[in-house]
Amino acid sequence: MDSSTKPEVAYEVPPYLRVFKDGHVERLIGTDIVPPSLDIQTGVSSKDIIIIPESGLSARFYLPKLTHTHQKLPLIIYFHGGAFCISSASDPHYHRSLNSLAFHANAIAVSVNYRRVPEHPLPIAYEDSWEVLQWVASQYSKLGDGAEAWLNSHADFERVFLAGDSAGANIAHHLAMRAADKELAGGVRLLGAILVHPYFWGEEAIGVEVLDPARKAMVDKWWLYVCSSLKGNDDPLINPVAVGAPSLAGLGCKRVLVCVAEKDILRDRGRVYYEALVKSGWPGGAEIVETEGEDHVFHLFNPTCEKAVVIMKRLASFINQDKALLLLG
Image (cartoon, rainbow, N blue to C red):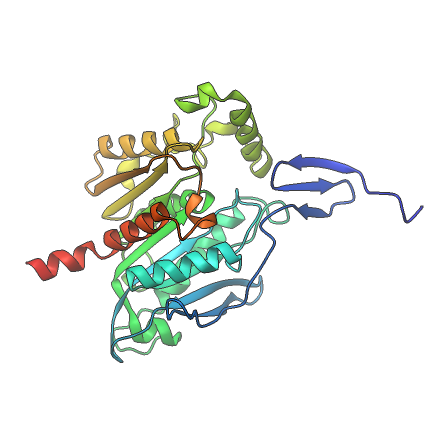
């Protein structure tokens, strides 16, 4: 065969990737990586840890600058976005965002590097994320002898949050649902979940989707690529309010914050999720925040703009709400 012949494209998922007939995958965005470091602007330190050596499953840990040796901090388990098929915990956008979140919230963050479609079909991303959550929970020890030093010395396992944006917010929701049925290691319980511009969808167009059929068709294609399901875009994995989906009343945490953006094609799905959660009989407290004039995950790409800073401070406030109430009381 002529070595100059270009391989044939079997499938494209714009703007994310293309898959060739010979099996190799070309990711078009979300491929840049940066190493862990000490962030000069925030004083946050980071490091990478292999969680499951057999699969290479890893996470990037973030620790803010401490004020005293025995300081205990909230713990955030974070899941990055990228439609389940691009980006990573090492992506410069996420590394910068997690430094900012750890700084503003004064919290330890664990950014999960779950495996991606198409090399690792769903539900592997969910299973990897659950494995990391369980591993983190297993570090809890009242005797202070957990294996991971940052968690052992500084994590407050009474204040554990799941968080993510886009596909990562989808993962955070499903893990919070699972945590209600399957006990976490060490008896750890989730305090809250943060869903930023969550990647939820559905077959029938709603809200802004009706006005933008071209963009809806593109998003339709994403899920049909990453998940082979007879239920299509009404699979409960992507549509948590679809007929037959588990009741949101079973969400396994006490508080939820949903963030949406006015120009995001996913906006109305986030609104519907919030409304369904409030009406479900779930005993927790839910909040929703909408950013006007912005699109999907704008805060990742323009992190220093005023609205991105507002969002980061809002996440920090949500995470530290219980501590603030305790101080006031």
